[in-house]
Length: 331
Ligand code: SF4
Ligand code: MG
Image (cartoon, rainbow, N blue to C red; front, side, top):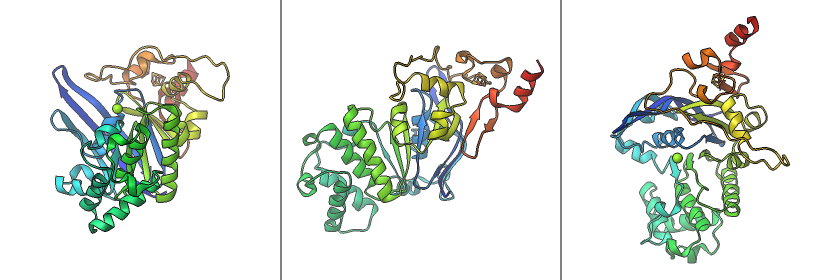
């Protein structure tokens, strides 16, 4: 499958008064054309920092890019000069944030905001740009777009505003859309509608989506593939099926056990005990050791290599490593 984005061994840290936080510690993944990849994990696991790094939106300082590469069509985004990156941002790769209100300017009409983005990135006349804006509003399911263009953000409901933000992100026909918790601020019904909209838009435009979320319910509805992040690392990747029906990392299993599922009646929800490690001085071994019911002596000392369970399913856990399996068998 064609790869639109390849992130390799990404490292990002932040300087704080307390010391240096290693927020992203060697993250590697690919994004295929037309797919939705969900990056899932608890808050502070590095998922938002990963997506902001792709957009080169990490402020330096306090942020610091410590190594790795982000290839978009063979170009390493980490090496681009600012003006080049600005061209890519918004046109080839665009981003949707959690809170639609911060993404919209309250003093400008929706039409002005949409056409501004269009005129910035595309060589069009004002009239043509307006036509694109109208088409975009229709695409995201806003009726009477001609009338709506003249209105201000406060004249729309929360769900409608998020649709407008999505329209703004799509207006220059990006190949990659990064969506960081795009439905968190919305109620459940609207959330479902927005997720449906993502699927619909993907079918129509072929855009590749990276969805950042802590919510496995959201993931179950839209992701083709899932990357589970913990303490700055991706600990398991697989298709939606592999992650939901055959999770192998104890952390992934813990995440799945801690959310309610519609297909199981009267199940017992078990939260994961303990807290993630402090990323000022991250553990050298598996960062889940302190919370893992299966931890072995080696876990704490050496970080496990990735074991490939299928072409699409990989896990960083000693339980799956043949060397540890042999050791356990000879005990
Ligand atoms: Fe648990 Fe060890 Fe696997 Fe980490 S490597 S998840 S501590 S069994
Ligand atoms: Mg976040």
